[in-house]
Length: 498
Ligand code: NAP
Image 1 (cartoon, protein in one colour):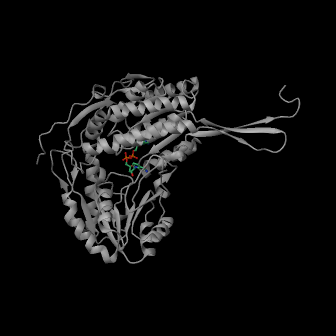
Image 2: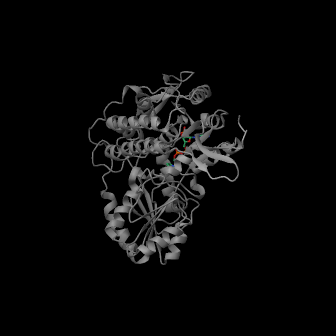
Image 3: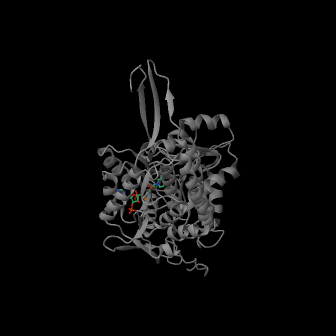
């Protein structure tokens, strides 16, 4: 099967091929090696990027260290850094089309969503971080005796920012913009499968006036480079987003080095639909929550819990509606569901659905890969009659797959929702607001949405509990994890300090 004959625009020159960005200059890997970047919509090679060596990691960290120690960035006032990040925000908006095309082709995102979600939220992150630059004040403490004490908030130093394949632009922006506004310097390692937007952001930050060495990008394999980056003696903080498995490894290494780490990890969120829900509104939350970004969404809502009187009704609506969600051609403006980001991800999803049906799940719709233009497509899938230990319920699928379970009481809904080790996001669909408050307080998750899904804003903290990690991104809470305090206490006794 083939999709419409609509060719995607050529990638910008900076991506043909992509090079490393170290110390304000573009360079090849020290051994000249490159790696292919594959377009998920066609399976064809899109471009190549440099495959960094350990020597390149060392060079990037050295550039970031030197830039930090020179004070060229950390020595600016928050207000001055704000101005530069605001310029970066303006440039992101000015380059919306270029960024959206690169993100769409690299990750397999439908172009409209790449524009209105990925680029838009990246711009919002820079805009919000810039606003935080006005609020980096320390404080004066009321101390007894003849002393004067104040607390400064200072940047940490060099931040290693490591991001996953699914939302490269947004997830790098939350880390980079917040680290930079606090006065840190950054070495960014994007995911191997989706490295392109990081290189465009490097161009944008340089044009915005971020000094050389303050922001650096190394592309290459996390398995080869990650340990060196995380344990490098000149790295002061690790900001990691990715799988629980790799996150635990990174946190262990960072812990041994006594280095602060934030870990934004996997999710497997429950979406609870009570019988009193506004059904149209609930369906409007349920479907995007599992099909958006082809389900490769840490805060997806793949576990649907429906109060029993509505169970069959909801299944019937999903059976009719889900196959109608626009699917396929990522260049078409109305497409909602594109391919998975890699063959590996497609195989993983297909295998988990197979395991789920072997364990007794009933396929309501979907349940198979889709042969479309050589891309990594999987049909949006709804699975009913699943027990809590079904693999598609118990594990993070990270694909366009929804499991649907029935519950009878509020207590049972909460118990089912909290029954996986993850705790990133959760949702409640109900018209009973007292119930919504009561249940929200009981859900083990970093965020709960009521009568909607993925209602995100850069000012609202976001992060996990349990196997979903620790630390928060977004909001002033995120800023704190890129700062440290220093207390300064003066002896005011007569004669002291003379
Ligand atoms: P991943 O395999 O854990 O990779 C994440 C990043 O870590 C990539 O850049 C990867 O590089 C790198 N990496 C691999 N081995 C490493 C090592 N030993 N040391 C340091 N870094 C290493 O995750 P993914 O498959 O890209 O992303 C999917 C996962 O991310 C899902 O579990 C999803 O839930 C989670 N996620 C969480 C959030 C959140 O906010 N909580 C947001 C988005 C995604 P390579 O690409 O080169 O392997």
